[in-house]
Length: 217
Ligand SMILES: C[S@@+](CC[C@H](N)C(=O)[O-])C[C@H]1O[C@@H](n2cnc3c(N)ncnc32)[C@H](O)[C@@H]1O
Image 1: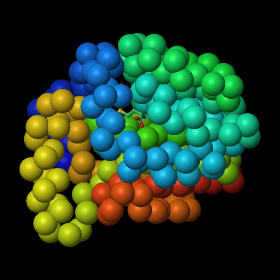
Image 2: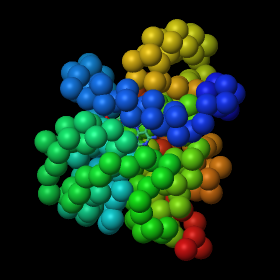
Image 3: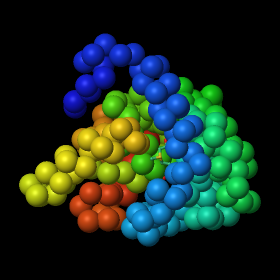
């Protein structure tokens, strides 16, 4: 996996600080900028909301776009790196969402094996190296717990690949976009078993459900 930032010797903490500043700045505009795409994401958010059960930890929750989709089977604790995004999320905080916290996805203030479900939507695609965050998600899952992701991936079709490569440059400046990750493979690499991969918006946006092993304690 390409990791330009670490190739330049930039430590993970500095990358997280970069995203914190970026999303603190973007917070007032985030929902507006995202509006044209949101209808394409909705089926993925609905699927995640329906699948989330028990103690549910959402990482990189942003302005709380997933909150309306959680059902009463989930007790949601939502986190994000950027304080201003968390403040925006508060406006969407309904009953299943018990608490909001500021936390980095790669250093969650949560005990090992304490969440039945972890959720990350469009969080891998804004990180140069999402592996530490995914490892942390696996750590906090109970045996048999589920990681539910919605994320971009570069499709195999050459024209779409080219288009996404061209768009990635300007979008990286704005959102810190990294579309190059193969999220199912990365989830497997942190020890989770892929249960479902489903197209949500063309071949680029996918819903991925992965399961922690029964022996994880
Ligand atoms: C593209 S937005 C997605 C927001 C939301 N999950 C959604 O689906 O609309 C990415 C979010 O991840 C957060 N984020 C980026 N890097 C993070 C990190 N290392 N730890 C926790 N959150 C992070 C950003 O602050 C931002 O809110």
